[in-house]
Amino acid sequence: MTVDAEGKVWPRRRPARRGEGDRLRDDIINAACALLEESGDTSALSLRAVARKTGVATTSIYLHFEDLNALLRAVKSWWLDLLAEEVEAAAAGAGDDPRDRVRAIAHAYVNAATNEPARYQVLFSSEITPPTAGVPYLGVRAYGSVLERVREALPASADADMVTLQFWCALHGLVTLRQTRPRFPWPDLALQVDDLATRLIDSAAQGV
Amino acid sequence: MTVDAEGKVWPRRRPARRGEGDRLRDDIINAACALLEESGDTSALSLRAVARKTGVATTSIYLHFEDLNALLRAVKSWWLDLLAEEVEAAAAGAGDDPRDRVRAIAHAYVNAATNEPARYQVLFSSEITPPTAGVPYLGVRAYGSVLERVREALPASADADMVTLQFWCALHGLVTLRQTRPRFPWPDLALQVDDLATRLIDSAAQGV
DNA sequence: TGTACATCAGTGAACGCGCGTTCACTGATGTAC
DNA sequence: TGTACATCAGTGAACGCGCGTTCACTGATGTAC
Image: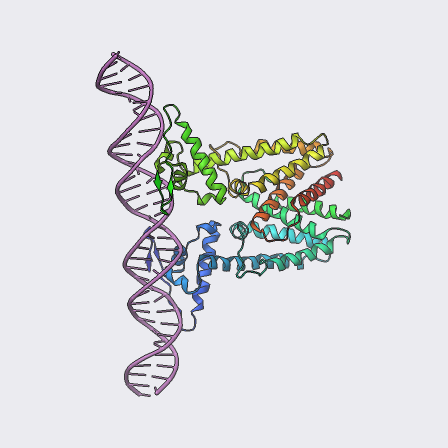
């Protein structure tokens, strides 16, 4: 048991058995996820808060992570994988029309971001520092597979790279503005996403 | 003179003369602006840092602002006005073709955001709490005038509200993603903005 | 013309807080002989 | 079968820092009489 400033009592975690030292690593990541889902703010995450939530001494975090940034990287990497999985699953389950697949991707992206706003904020409100220099961004693979889906939905003469980019930017803007300007008179989310998809796909159908 | 933790010496500000007490208010806002332009992070702003930068005792800030949030609101309001002015000036100076005016607005918006990235982040990475409840968002007037410009550029059958909204979202996404994913292989900024404008205006020219 | 007083425009010490990081320490469990 | 030892999986006290906020105080400049 530990007691915090407010006198709140935290259960103390039982030490792992020999050979199971990595259990703590997972527990720490889960605690950090929970805290970040509450705040959505990476700069509000502290080693001490994570330790309290995990039920462990602050210093124990150093056994598994070099510092707070390394822990944050682990969380971001995990969440980005989840996002990519959701998007790819939506594309795969969307029937045969390639345009429907692109629409499905767009909806899946904004739904994932909207259902877990704090996760999306953590992922996209700051750069994700790669584990080692020279490695590409996490997420480039997922972006590439979306690009392929867009290419399949457009005529060969269209600029699929640009359309994909505009799509991503617009969806990102749509999601983040809704989060930071909640009192703006937003239209229905799905309606706006559909409208955007129509405009971008149609513009490309003109051959650009 | 004051001395901070690193032994760095700060010039102490001369007190205002009688009747000029509001001078300090401006000095404080300027100091806060400078700090926020360096960090772009509202949560990194502290009363103590502002006081040091102003050359004044920390407690003196309370003479003019109820708390940090009130100071932050003043900065945001000021910067939002600057942004709106830049955009409106660009629209006014863009010739007679209403489509050119819309393009000019788009370029002015992203240029303002790109030239002062920290300002843009401060404005749009969190909600701007209005001074009093019931008052609309700061910036609604500016948004409305952009909406009018868009309406003038589209056929009457087009959904100018939706096009304006998509425009804003896409530009916002474009700007913020470039800031938080600087290592992504971005195309030329003006080229992407122009491409976006073309796609959205063309889609509306179809009458939607 | 002199002086007491009020007001303006601040100051400075102190408080308790949460934070990252360091350092030496501990207790249980497995293993070599 | 017993025991000394190594290792694993952590702990806990202490450090100095910057922070918001409080409180009583100060020094210069006007103003009433």
